[in-house]
Image 1 (tube, rainbow, N blue to C red):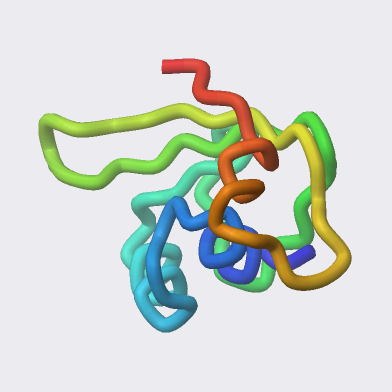
Image 2: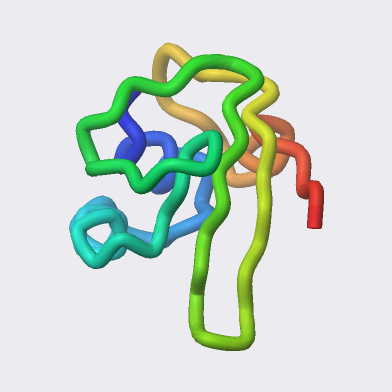
Length: 82
């Protein structure tokens, strides 16, 4: 699954266009490396998302969905590391 699609489906970012913009600005790292929106993800990858200068969150991908994900199920796709 593409990085921008995962960010939107998991509801870490609300819209896919916003996810694309965040990726383009270099604020997302996958396993410690800057990643573009089209980066293919795998279970176990670690995402570091910088929301602002003071706010950074780290997520581990637990599951990659194949289709639509309900709002209630979205948090089960990742685990917050910090």
